[in-house]
Length: 164
Image 1 (cartoon, one colour):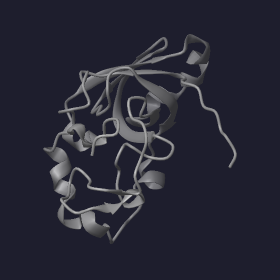
Image 2: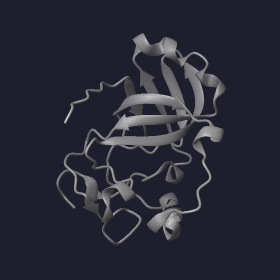
Image 3: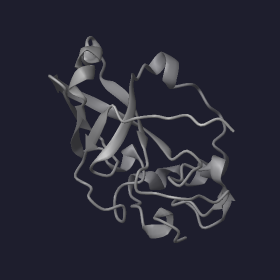
Image 4: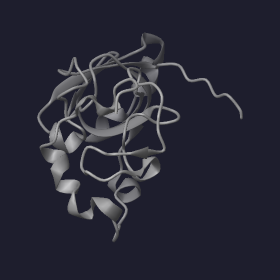
């Protein structure tokens, strides 16, 4: 298997210093404010980004290790296949969140709706475009009856280290 190396382009700062008790999706962190500190040498890449209301953040779940192919997700009591969940312990530990872009000043990007751990390494930023990203879907698998829980459920220790 090929090895692909990524390096952080910056760091996400949020009000959440512990994995236990933080929101599990941006829908549960609607009012949570944070900011991205982008590497200064990449600041030029922020040109024209301020014209977008939302951005997609790709980041590294840097506090997690190991994974299982069957997990009991936060929004269910039944074990599910890892790839049918958004569980943070994954083979490549990559997370994704869509957040509101509030302001850009130099290499600092102020955001709202952040649901990640303070100090999370940022891998990439992409503009959110509803015509591209909000595709019509008519099936939501096991989440059809549970998706609303994302607004109130908080994380616990089930995806921290080797504890499940």
